[in-house]
Amino acid sequence: MSKGKDSWCKTRHKVLTFLLGPIVWILCRVKYGARIERFREQGNRPYLILYNHQTPYDQFFVNLSFRGPVYCMATEDIFSLGWVSKLLSWAFAPIPIRKQVADLSAIRSTLKCAKDGGTIAIAAEGNRTYSGKTEHISSGMVKLIRMVKYPLAFYRIEGGYGVEPRWSDKTRRGKMRTFVSRVVEYEDIKAMSDQELYDLVTNELYVNEAKVDGLYKSNRRAEYLERAIYICPECGLAKHRSSGNEMECLSCHRKIRYMEDKTLEGIGYDFPFKFVNDWYEYQKAFVNNLNPKEYIDESMFVDEGVGLCEEIPFDRKVPIYQAAEVKLFGDRIEIRSGEDEMIIPFSQVEGSAVMGRNKMTLNHGGKTYQFKGDKSFNGLKYVNIFYRYKNLAEGEVNGEFLGL
Image 1 (cartoon, rainbow, N blue to C red):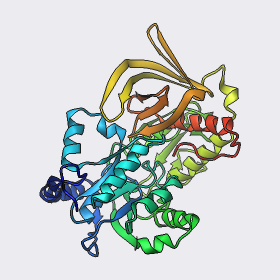
Image 2: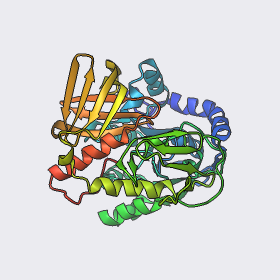
Image 3: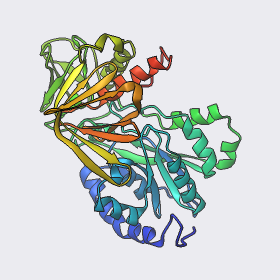
Image 4: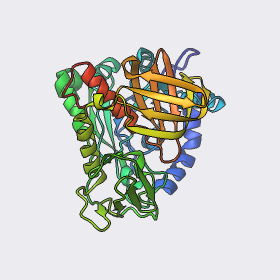
């Protein structure tokens, strides 16, 4: 491994990984109760690690399974925290990438890290799952795998959705396991077609937790499920509100209960979906059959008290509004704060992404705008509707990709 002045990989990364490893191990065990399996067949060579993404701690699980530093790809949000970002970059040198836009600098950084002999880890979905099922994986991953020229290690995270769903702030007590499931040598990769390699990646990283596989105990199991759900099977487009183990549609006032085994049940009626994933898939199908032109004059949703800032990529966030009213239409977003008004037409948006739990970004006019709402804010609906608009505008009438 090269450790020169201009090298991506520094000696301090190895030292800090060694010193902090036991502390991180304890934190992961206490917070998640995760069974983190070490990769004992690692040897003394670097790997390209692809993992499915279920919890905020996934990169730590990967690091703990491997010996030595692992250079994880991380989104721009991590690099916009001032001195904290600078410290993380100095200590661990994560590879920065911008979500949902073509980012050639991320590829260059990845190849530099590989040239210097660093083990690299990438969340292949680019997003944490909302439903417990592995999200969309871009076919562009195939090209990157070929460029890095490393043996490929598949890392599976199972039970993470049950323990801490993306839409929740609450960790539950339940079983979780993380481990290397398979290693594919680069010589074997070279012999595969692009389609064969893509199928390998999607099959190896596919996890679907829409099943009863144990109990996940908490007294706030449904809390903030409205961050993921904005379609009611009874009402269509609708806001929801959760409390404890229950969530209510604010239009028809029907309630569901989220059970310890991850199943859903209607309170006083037969609910059509057994798991969140069933509801989530119904929601995607609903949006993919939606005509955005029907929502040009009347908004789909209105969110109050949303903070807006401009994100200077990999640097800082510049506040614009502390608490704005944001309206979602079929072809645009309108933002109002006092006398100020900003309109962002979807025709001028390059990309959109959900960040964390209650944040959303839009890339418009060469700038990145980040929206952050209250605890119940659903940024997913903005991303989904934008991509529905984009698919239709580009002639992909049957396009199913909605940003995740």
